[in-house]
Image (tube, rainbow over all chains, first blue to last red; front, side):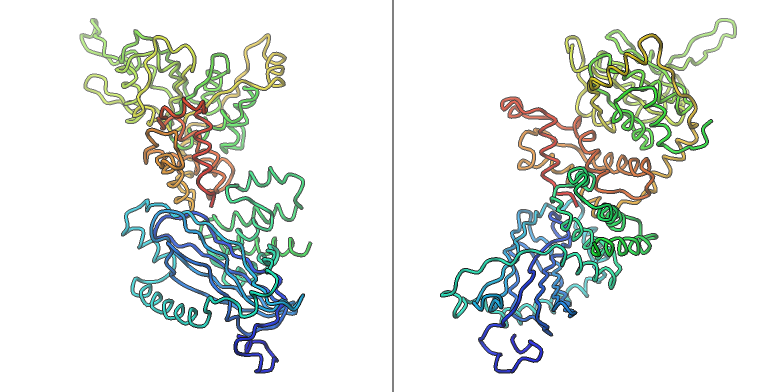
Length: 280
Length: 311
């Protein structure tokens, strides 16, 4: 893990913890309810001020009642540090509540020099019974994630192998010195950082899923509640939002739900609108 | 005729006649675009009849009103065959259901066989009189009113028949300012109707456009989840019988119509969420807990809807 710290001496490797300025560690899902078999994208976002080429000791949330269909990781560095984005594509196994425990990262907090555990928020997903015929649903699911059934099986095998690797690489053990250290405060969420990351992903991907993620990040940035529609949000925030944010929220809504034929132009518009929001 | 032939012009025209009740007016236009029928519930004197007249005038359609009474017969609605002695032939006399906008006033005052005649007509959009099957004019919309008070001597509509109405709109009292405006504006004269804002052919075109409005799969899931929530004991502890899949279809149709009314060709979560109460309220049978705990039916529906997170 520490070997990933660019320019660090190799002696940092091993059991020692990285010394990190953790600015943000958050987790969000593109929806909070889904039928069994339907794909949900759970995104974990970490931002540290240091320049890292990989993040190896991030412990993923407990995914009881969920099956992992895919795991995509992106890492990007800029002048502000490193952005790490891990998107888990999961699906509910059985109807009920799936509670995702916080993802966490053990590190030496560079602010106070203490070993600390940085935790994300937790998530609760509601898995409901399948509402369509299983066969139709699996066809739709396969179409959505762009994989054939064979592809899904292969992807699952790869994911399983990766997860085994992760579990070996990231044992959830108590910190050697953390027990004696002061209890770690969870890192605060930074919706702005999440929005920047979602914007970057939208610029790169330009897909419906990226547009939905950008909408979710923008809603989080605006302080939307999970049960709020856009109109309800705008009514509640009446006067408390900037015109640019209101415009961006409307355009994000448009890009998330517009027909395929005009999706790309809608994405162009929402990218510009989010950029304006972030400039302010 | 006004150059703009968009559905919003109909809303403006009807709202120009009716002070307040904007939600009611929009609901009527949405049902018209979605090609469904509406139950209107409210105490007398809230301009329900006027709203229906204004709607018919705005689309340049024919308006007929049927006052439902206990002695009404199916032939009073559908029509009948009369023998003409001069020509020694039967001629068909069409009933008042042959109109573009039909107001079935106090539908629960007529017995079941009359209600059934109307509801069959609503479904089939045609009536059989003697040997002839005669289609109703298009567009065709039935607006049925029910008075929540004075339930003595009424024949409650069974749930299965209520289900045939696309939506149920509650007509509420106007605000104080609106009531003042009503007195000032219409105290001494009959409210003027705004006529021919659009033609029946425009309505047919809107209906076709609404069918092409895009609904993302995630919103289709949301629609189904909302309706299924009424059958879920956890989300709806006060419900005895939840809404049928016809409610899902109705919600999708109306959401498309609302998108069109708003000038969009795609549905938003707001469209679905805002219309869910009107689609669900007459399709649900509540259990004894609702009454025992003194919960208002509308509150129970609101809770069921809120239990489903918005996409």
